[in-house]
Image (cartoon, rainbow, N blue to C red; front, side, top):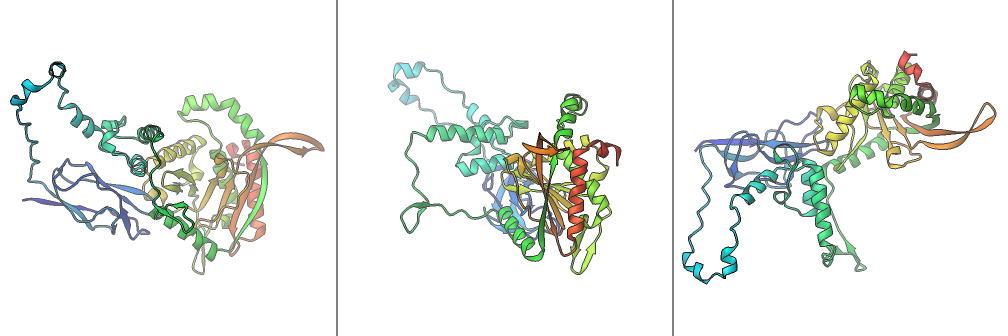
Length: 414
């Protein structure tokens, strides 16, 4: 017997442990090298654990929901074993004369069709697996349209909708529990990501002296710029020209003028960063994620748009890496995509400031003594008052406002 161990993958220095999700194989199942066996949820990402070799899964050491650390043994694969062949169906010739004539005339189903479909759809992306798990749907019953038959998030959503539609006519399932007044309640444990987010938000509020300053910016110039060049931009760069890249560029311009807003606190020291790593908050099925645009000051508008689009896609599929979610000197949170008009964003430690942007709405404003209608966006800059004075915070936000209202300055580096 030759045994190969399946280990917990290496975690980042800031992550000490992780939680196992659902095993996709059971002892005795055949395993192909690089086949995904289980997903490991950290407080930042979901990591897929592939089989290190082909063989038969001989033992699962850590079950679903277990808390594990890097390098721990999850399972063992017998690489010398071969899966037992499925027994051939026993002949039932004696039953043939008793079969109805219509049934005898019916063509027999192809025996290989079901296993092939099952094998094709048995591997699901993390996002798809989570959706199917929550809905109680077996991934093996879902036809995958992704690469090599992989079940994508879209496949899972479609199966979920179909399942919901089929169950609509059935009686509602019994509630998990009843409250003191007899009304239904459901108790669900926080995911590791959600628990970590809660912990960090409390840490931020308890350790930072958070204040928020507000301003507003007319988005007319950027809207006009996009309207004129968006088709040519997409044709040239293969990505849509959005708004976020302008906010990133405006933030970097302001951070260069007021470096303390780009700084962080380490004990009794203030660390001034000579680089601009901007965190962009994106939503995912597991909750909020903040991947980092490294050296954003060196990125073009097209580079930023491509990177944000890539992060958004991979956040939905749970494919963001630990490195992409680690670090950052300043963050931008866009509640406007959900319709938010105003908010007070919470700082992401150890950063010292975060910009909140909101929905752009047409409002009456006064320009040169005249009331005009302009597409306005409220800006909110939350900052750590321990190291950032109100003057620097207000001036930094004004600098962002000015850059947004005159985007040509961003392109000219002014």
